[in-house]
Length: 122
Image (cartoon, rainbow, N blue to C red; front, side, top):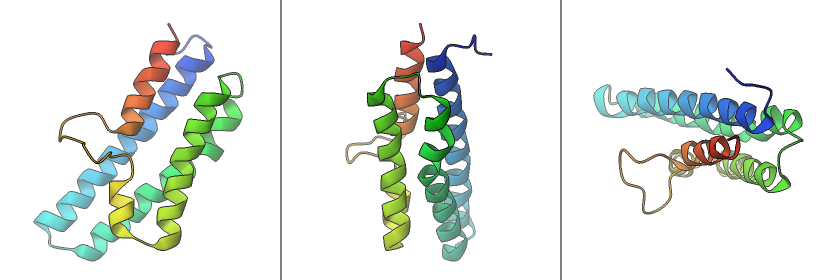
């Protein structure tokens, strides 16, 4: 997969997390809109936030050779998710990664960031 390029390695890890988050969100939407199960939806959004809150701990130590700016961006993803968990807001958790002007089908902030990191690998 990667050639040892730290940017490529980081992009791959970010893409994996982004995919995992999308899958959780899909399960959450199904729980809420198909199964009418708000508790399950809340659990899925909490799971999403937990994954994002741990992103910096999981990724940054292994990517010290990339720019500080990229590592700081990863830490901001984690900080926002940690704050959402701290306040316990399902809305805040669901809105993680989505800017106000997000349009369905567009990449979310993590997917967009992963693509930018991948472009730096070239």
